[in-house]
Length: 207
Image (cartoon, rainbow, N blue to C red; front, side, top):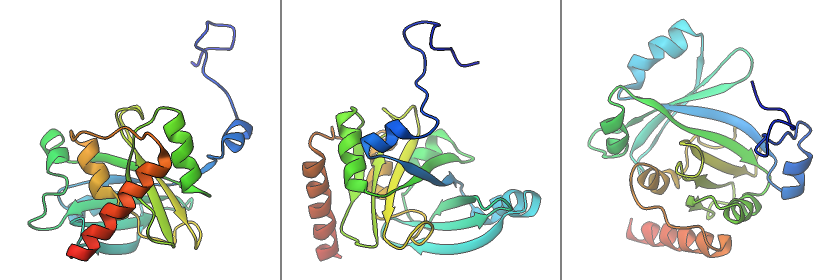
């Protein structure tokens, strides 16, 4: 049971109508959660066969090195399965800790990801995997160290919820930070975003 407001100085804040979040500019809509597995086809027996999920998107991100399948459920919720591509080292550290797989990240849609990055930095979260170059989809991640052990993805999509790929370009950097790498301090959100955008452009020029 959650403590009430008079049960000590550390009672949990309540903001059921979202007024506080709105004032901070970080109102978010839950989009999906992602489960990393060694083999998606094996996991579909559970999520599609037993639980009734309907595969609605199946794609490959060759740059990061993963395949992702999204499933839609009866209530409209979406769930994602991700697996590394053959020869990819993506998720190596994750599977070293969780050989059979496990919950990898949760994704929330925001109206303004730059504002969300700024607020997150001010609140002391480590912001990693920032990618702002794609006008249709901008994203950033909150490092698990400050997000209670979860890799939290924040996405701004110009075409509305569900329009983009389940996991974006920034995931590779976010995974590296979230799986034992050194995540840099967010500092200024503008500086963080600028560094990430430059890195992304450099990567594109090399590719």
